[in-house]
Image 1: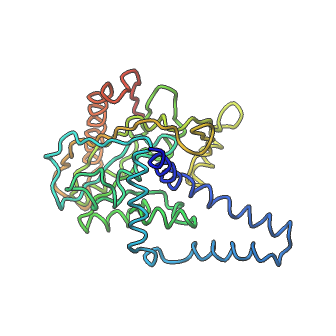
Image 2: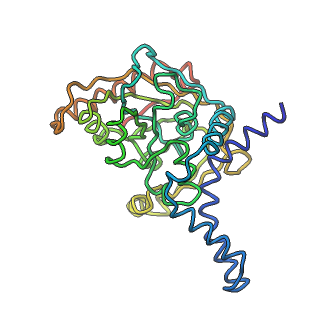
Image 3: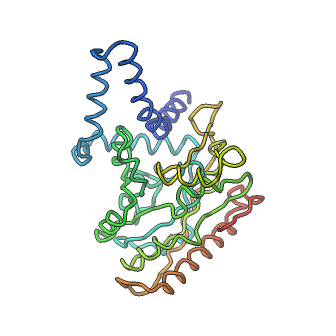
Length: 321
């Protein structure tokens, strides 16, 4: 039992600590150069490895060792919370069909997404297993260590080019339509989804003839306590500009015992029924896109209402803006 607990802590540390380590290393190297001189061998060694990891083609790092590593991190990481997965309509999914899957909410971090949709995940049913790629901010693929980890998981940059490439290969894509904007809208005891102006993923689905799938991760918002920049200390307009500049929201998050480890809060990921948006169109009209978005939002609301009591969020309202 103790060994199992240690394994889960190590696994979840892999998911959350890579970002911290990658961001910390430049400060460490700078400190070593200043305090010990520009000829310090340790600083130069760390810098060389760091630069190598920043530029090596990600395809070169794939292999059996990386697959086993991600398999361990996915299995054990999911057990940490734990994460459960449920399909609202299992019979609706077809093997070989590509889907555009809209995962909500973003929360402080969308922690349920990597272990659930990793290529080595054992949570997904067979029509989807090994055939789904999560999409992540492009900045993740510029950070040494993080870029390797995310690539091994199966995450790819959330760009139109990457998503269309995967869909043409009959691969499904999972993205968070609300994005980091939802971090700015976080509220206690409320789930706020930023969806009404998010039309790009619907347009993508229509262009590629892919059904859209609503997904909700119940319990994810509780995995971190948080405090963020904003009024009255910092103008909201400044926070918005900074968020767009760095591709992330400046927020202070803390979890278990005030550490970067998330709270051990059970998460229940519910995958809704695929929504057929009609015949593919290389140039869908604004009306078609708007209608598809309204259908997706309503399906998300219905999914939330059906499962909120079962998933322990009966007293938490869902708000879509």
